Length: 382
Image (cartoon, rainbow, N blue to C red):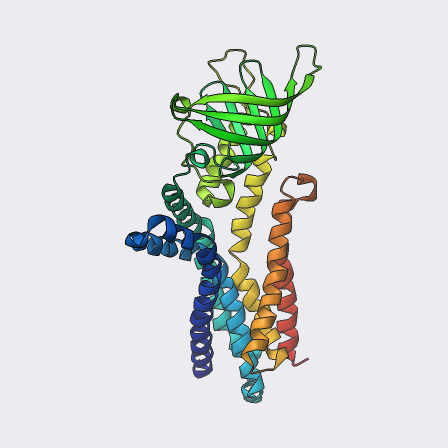
């Protein structure tokens, strides 16, 4: 038994290292072609070490995805060959059950879960943020630095600004809360201009919809074709260094959630020196729910290796093939199915009635349940 355990564990580990390396290279390739080559052009050949640093910073973020994919592929390949070579039949003939045979692999998957949790909840987001900061420094895009995407930015005691997208100063879905008259401004698009002479940013909003609450409870709603907002750079609080929600670590998400909930609970004050925060249901895109979904996504994603191992072992036995391409193709299909739930959960983060925080847990429950049933059937030889 110990010999078989050592044999299978060694095979899975060797295959795991190889597949993780391959998936890391493939996932990095897209970033290299899309972004890092631009860094090389901007930084120049004399700054090649900066580009290498950018690639190194991206690796931990890529491992968030490469590790579960690699474990799934390695179990499919190893147990596919183990079954095709009739080694499983020989083990069963010796009175060894499949459950006891694969126990070290399941324990290995739990260790991978711990690594995945570290990558997903801490190391990966931190490395991604460092990479983005490095890229931003080289691009010298001041507008993007001052108004990052998907984050509430306090501007003195006069404004809170939120933008869903910032593409080199071209903004989409902007919301501005003005504390001077307690007015909310919404605009589908906007543009940033940098006035270096006066050290200010001019935020030009287009197709603006303004909502001003009245004491009688009936708001005044009006529309303006174009509205400029002048922002003194010296008055902006140092919040540009804070990452977007999707790039926060788990501890940062906890702090962000606490801060948003405090802002939501803070009463509206008529004193301009006390900047009131919008209520929770007025937050753009329901940021509180988005933070909660992201927290649940990071936790749920940490359990991906166990679910992948649980379903990969019996599927590899059922496929009963030695060919590597069959195992890789099957792994990619399963990965697409698994990640589609996370994409769906993130898309529904603005619709709490659909329980998006539970949707991101669905693939773990499905894969582990299906994997347990298939493993039980494979253990019985059916």
